Length: 159
Image (cartoon, rainbow, N blue to C red; front, side, top):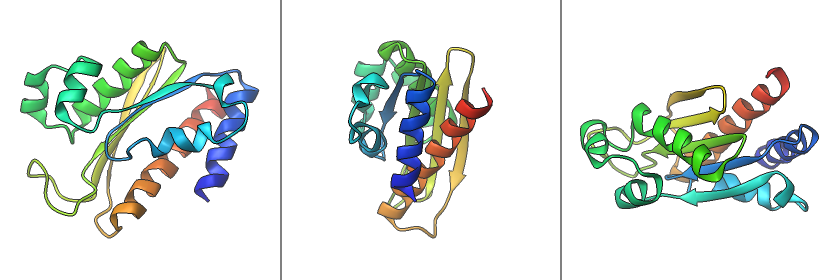
């Protein structure tokens, strides 16, 4: 299912001549790797950043340390900034961000299974919240990638 959606996303991006990028934390670059495995990926992909640590979010994305301290990295606010800043850095049509707690334990007093997907275009930036504590770590990451694919495909089809 994931590879099918990843391939479908690649084809939609290609057909609409759209350029994507990603800023990933708990997904560790797996989202963008699903796109770059396709021949011709350089025509639709500007790149991806794995900002796993707080310091990389601060230094590479320009997210204010005080915002991270206030909201925590597993938050709607940081997912929003990751999505928006990533799109600006890559100068892409679409940027997707992932931040969350894949476990095994609690992070920032936030439960395992809580994650956020940010989605930014030149017109808007939105964040969706998810909580799936019944999934194992790698299942949760694949679920997040699957959800992002659906969000982007839906946007490309509807505008």
